[in-house]
Amino acid sequence: MKHIKLFETYTNQLNEDVLRLRTLTEKSKMGFGKYYDYTVGDLLKIDKNEYLQWVYYNSDMINFMPEILDKIGITDEFRISKPGKNPYKFDNFKKFIYKNMTDEERFNNLKKLTHMKKQDKLANLNDYISKKNQFTKGVMQSRNQGKL
Image 1 (tube, rainbow, N blue to C red):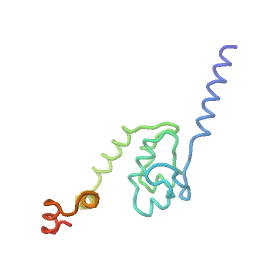
Image 2 (image 1 turned 120 degrees about the vertical axis):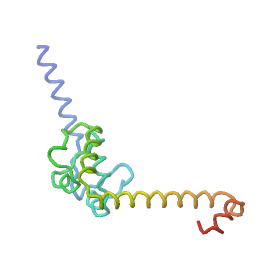
Image 3 (image 1 turned 90 degrees about the horizontal axis):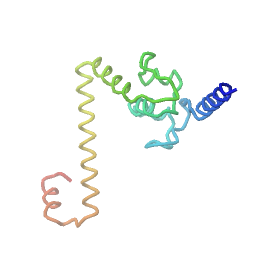
């Protein structure tokens, strides 16, 4: 009798996990995070594959259709069982991708990252300037040197 109750409890938990598991298609809205209103297809179009990969490995109740996993580069050997998460496998996946890149792809990836960092710094600087007095010595020097 005790074994039957334990089995029923286990199956109920398993059913609850399956009910909460979301399998996203291209038309599914994310509904969470930085890209709340975007669909998965929108993120694929604007080349946010790394974000989708991060979501796959770090969210236990989010899964993607096999076609989408193929589009974002997650092959069968790097797939994980859901519900569940495995951030360590994400690190291994990124290392594998980086090893298989050509030198030109690595350079373009690095160039893209440094460009994004510069844009972030400029955005932060512009926010800082708009919030503070615009005629301080540092702000005037930045304007004269062409940084703004």
